[in-house]
Image 1 (cartoon, rainbow, N blue to C red):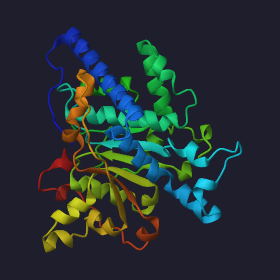
Image 2: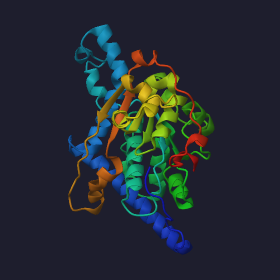
Image 3: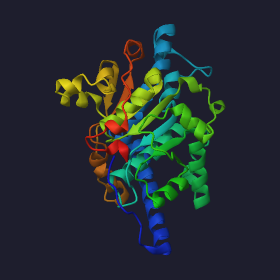
Image 4: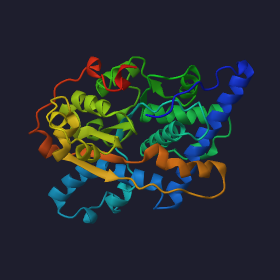
Length: 339
């Protein structure tokens, strides 16, 4: 959850349109930069992020192979190739829920803009596991072609987006990127099943051999307030086996919560789920290449510091009692959930 501001307000109709185009081009440029370094460097942020997501979204199927065949690396598909090769870039993500990115239209290459570009990059990689002609985005030459690419990606792996302080200009840009904007502040308690119903569940599970039941819901929440994570845990407590979070380290919250009152808070789902939590740190690395869009990646530390991929160990979560519900009226510390 990052900066707020006024965006292109006050520029006039023509100026606002030009400003929107600059923002769109910058965001698309950052997506391309993330894609390029993902393909070229195994030490890049984007490669490590995708690799961590691949690991946690394919681990269930991998465990089944190990139980049934002993050694996963020895299994073959019908064509005689290693299944591991086919899964190397597979992201079994059904949808992405993006909470609290902030105002990405207020300045160029800000943390919110990087966070938005990154979630669009993740959608592209997840959709490319499904769309056989995913390379069409490389050939998109005009606005209509580009919007068609974004629409196909959203149809396959929808992004559900909520930002309480969203600007009209940002809403327009999200429409261009074909992102589903949630209208009501549910304080993180809206279940993904309700989001799918609101959106008409456009993503079709019939386009892939991987069933929807085996796919994961990714909650994309860099630098969100602790209570928002707690509410997401509360609302998805019975389905944490299919829930992944990219956000602040839960173990860091555990280390910083020292008071008896904080550690015994019945609404704090983070502390309750810690023993069942697996975290993969995503190391940040700049890409100093002199190009402005690549230079934007040097600000990754601001956008994603202390953010990990968080998944949950199914065999342990069943023994955990669901935390009590937390209400926005109780949020008297900073009011972030009440906006």
